[in-house]
Image (cartoon, rainbow, N blue to C red; front, side):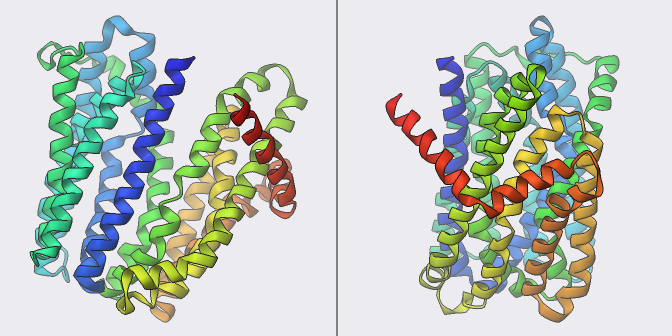
Length: 438
């Protein structure tokens, strides 16, 4: 049990440190570049996320499962994953490059950023496959250390570049450089800790088709999730220009950097929920309510803190050129309760084998977000994108539960958690006491 706890701690540390470093570097870079140049960079990174989802193909969880279930066939499993992810990320890199070079309206600096970013996407199969190999062996610390060194090196390069006045393209080079350093270190650690040499990897079409068939639903859901997160910046660039993207990116930075909190809460509770569901439906419902209570109360605590301190933090850290981000931020953070609760709902759908409902709600929410952006951005700019985000998250992750008889009970559980926050406060207090007492 201890090794699993330590492995989880390493993965959590990777997420927290990565988010903190990302926020700090982004603040420095954005302040020195200014809204327009930073908007170019944020726009290209959003396109990287949209194209990059092709490479993931929903295979990460399946890869870890196959490595655990078939340890004698790990060379074949790694070969299959590398070929499939290589094809996906290769297509993503090519698509990103062509989009950047051929899309009318892209500025010269943006085109160079797309070139640099496509190189980073092209090397992603290595880290995607080897990182999951370490996770399957409960040795996430090696992947974490490699990623941390890369993040530190890339962040240092980006900060140094803007302080030296090198411009936005150099920031993109720093991003790709950091990823490349992390990949090289990961390969070295993989070979030093018993990983089968790439020359021994093989490929099976039969197993590849089977894995791809299982991953389709996850893959489609992940596409919708990325659309949720990044399409607003892409549409802002097309309709308003890079400066608006820069303002909006800063407005969304604080709230998006905290999305890992509900994932950690729901992920920690997930194994226990699976166990209880198999034998005691009433106990399962009680524990699920506990999870929603904690998620809702955590969201409200974070929301109050951000509403109180966020505007001051933006003004102090970013300066007057980013002051228009404050009202956008105040609207954007209101979506946090729905984002937090969605994590618990997603685990419930996995346990109840409701992948189709998950995909439908994610897809409907993403389409609603796009439609609202089309209507609101021309009139309200970044504020319109924030309103679209709030409405689409509320619709897909909360109100949509009323449309199916099987999910109405979850809607009522969420409502109870949202409007009775003292329930979560009480449960969080008990939890902290248990952790303190060991």
